[in-house]
Image (cartoon, rainbow, N blue to C red; front, side):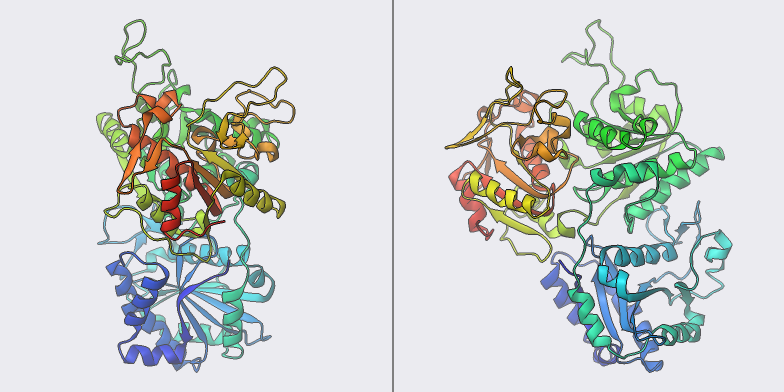
Length: 631
């Protein structure tokens, strides 16, 4: 895995390309080859307006041979940095990088906290991360995840506000808003700062060895991202651990701003954070919990998942028993006093139930005839700032009702404003949204086109296995190399209780291959972890996980066994209730949708790769016919 960019050239070469009106054409071509999909018109406008303002300065500063990496992908996600300039540092000849964030803003105003700003005449009223904070986050990701940069490079940052004057941005200067930053490493320049910008470039860049250093950077190994559970205790109890980029940073800072505003008497507000698998919802949740509690804010994390909550508690308890009590369930707030806590962070909010009362019957009431209060209202009522993080395509069982519409309708009925922030960028699956899109198209989820040919990716491996034993052998080898791996399957086999001696029955049988489901026991028995710890316990490999033990978790490599509850007919998918053994979804009216969502979740747990296998021969042939390489 190594960094990649849309276009690489010297500043002089780019200057010629721009003069010949060829830059946009080349960037479009590269975008189609490397990324594909629809290209945002605003991105093209940014290329056209912003890149020449930097290239011209480099040429004027006699830095025409400096290498320019346009739209360099960050090491851990699909977020792209506008420009990275590569050369030698004038002092010692060491690799020198300048990360450039281009902004077309003509003005900006202070946000509710120093890390946020408002931009007049932009869509919606939500604030954006302060551009200095944004470009600093890019710098930190380069240093943290590329050992070469950490060891042998000097990294500076520039915010290029070429459409604005210093007077128009006076109110968002770091000194004006109280933003903490290192002025020796990051600068913000406006249209009337051209000479200062040029001087900075001369001070930190020379063309010597520029091509060599650029090649080194593009070939440099990238450290893999750590899974949430391996560092959650550090994040909650001690310090910020995870890098937050673009919309992640916007969401994180917006919640902090809402907390500050609430203490000044501002009206109550629901913050709704929406994103697909791997967009960092749980990372935002955990970082918020840790930061807010360290600042003395009463913040609590809640989910509707026993496995996820117990694993979080278990991970944090090793460091702090008190901090582990910050993890709760959605049904814990039936009798909570209104505004009892400052911030309630509802992670996996698609798992919200209609009510919290387990006695609620099928007619919408309770056994004693009472009508249950909607769980979503309880959650909104319990905190001064309720935060909901969800993915509507992760509804996988009957009774789960969490959705954008549900939360908005409940908030409106309670007279509470809603601020929605959408997460676009992919931090799992090798930082490749292409894979997530491919899975969604494969399963026919919200896309006009059905299954598409698989195009191999540099940062994510996908294979099809002819048998489950071949899948298991591949994943076992990955584990031997130090990677984490698990096999998840559709709920198409019965699930037995542990035997009298604590061992597990081999319920999942495919031909002569047979393995047990993960344990149903509440605690560890004979070295076998309980279901809540299957995804993280070293002994979890060898047992098969289902949707309820995999959802919310991630591991390096994901094996996915498609059962006969979803098979390919040659023209479309057919969902088969009789092949499914899950009582939670067996009689659901939206059975087909829930099963497709289930396989989407299982297939997007892997951070570095996935292996698919179907018990149905025609479905397994589909994977191969789509170009997925076989093991």
